[in-house]
Image 1 (cartoon, rainbow, N blue to C red):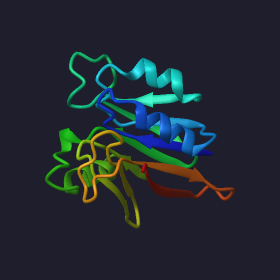
Image 2: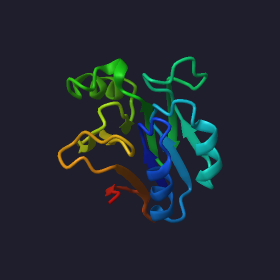
Image 3: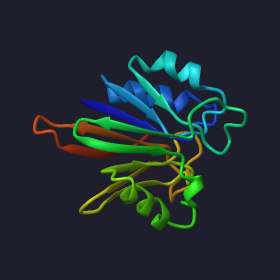
Image 4: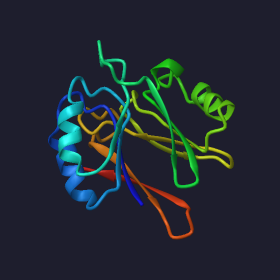
Length: 160
C-alpha cells in the first residue's frame, strides 16, 4: 500500500499535481489541512480515495478538524497541528498522540517537513507543497509505503 501525504496547498495545486504524477500509483491521499476550498479539485485529481482535514486557514469549512484512521496495522491521527502549538515544538502533539494510543501522528501547519520516529510513536509532517519555509524552501511531500511484512516506510520527497 502506498499513501501520499501532503499539507498546506493553500489553493495552489501545481506542485500537488506534480507530486501525484511523481508518486505513481497511490492507494490513498492524505491532506493535512489548509486547502482553502480546494478539496473538491484535490479529490478529482487524486485518482484514489482521499482524506482531508481542515487547517487554520480553512475558514467556514465543513471538513473535519481531525481524523483517526487505521492504515494497515497503524492507528493514525490526522490533524493540522495548530491546536497543539506545533510551531513552538512537538511536545504537545506527541503527548496527544500517546494519550490517544496512536502509532502515527500526521500534522502540517509549520510548512517544514519532519519524520520523527520514536520507539512508540512516529510524527510526520510533509511540509508545504506550495509555500515551504525550511532551509532551501523546496516544496515537499511524504510517501508512506506498507511493505509485505506490514511495516511502514516513510520517504520525504522534494519537488524541484
